[in-house]
Image 1: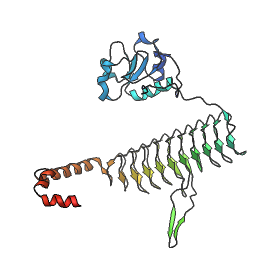
Image 2: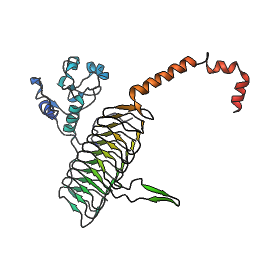
Image 3: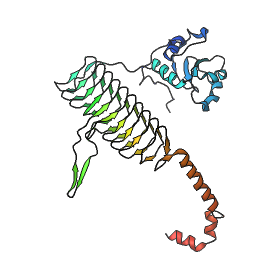
Image 4: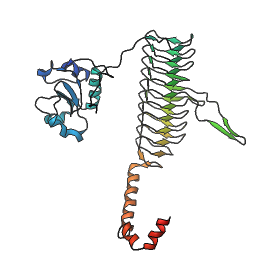
Length: 366
């Protein structure tokens, strides 16, 4: 059995070691323990396995019992929990431990550096414009009049279609395909994603279905992440828009003409039907489904596996299918459970079957 390891060097290049002062600066924290500023740290690890030269963190109070036994040299932690740390462990205090942890982990494990240039096996149209600082990987295809911005990376086998434009610092994963789209700056598209294909649009005629031309685009604004194997359809006449800062998990489906506001979060296997609008900071749980032509208000939260068939007000939290406010849903669940307890017959299933042998024989025959 292979032992668990954070940042296996076969896959992740580590930088450092760094003095604690540098770590605190990366985490945007003030270091109050002056005696520890020059103490060297070599990496990060969970509370249970971290050693004296490693940094850990605690954000979820559920695991606060692990603090007393940790051997981590420093822990990023909320101020009110600092007194639970062992004597030899330095506390890096912040009200947002997880955000600080993200910055520290990125210090020790920075993104893989670019290797600017075009791989000999890539297929690049003569009319495409590729920045000198961009990296085009093996077997990638860059279509006519495509534009690849500064410091972009296009992974192996990825296809960038005709006229597509990538802003600076984009990362396009292996075998992703992008057509009919403009991407802003710092957009990450993970492997296998499909952006800009035709939407699900057709007319019904007496002779059968008639495909409707999909003449819109996909506009992906700055700082968006699009997970592996996501599909984002281009618009039919309007554009499909993914707002700045939004995060799409793996296997998300976005229909044509959908508009996401800023910093929306869409969790795995969720699907949004055409022409639905999500305002800023909406959160959509895993496997949730939204029908078309809806408006989901700012900061609304949609629970996992919810089926949303009508508009949702700003700030609302809904669950269930059909989706309804959280309190209403659980009130109904509690009511049904009370009814079941009140109406449950005396004795279990086995006792009822033994009291009626003929019924048991009939059920066995079925």
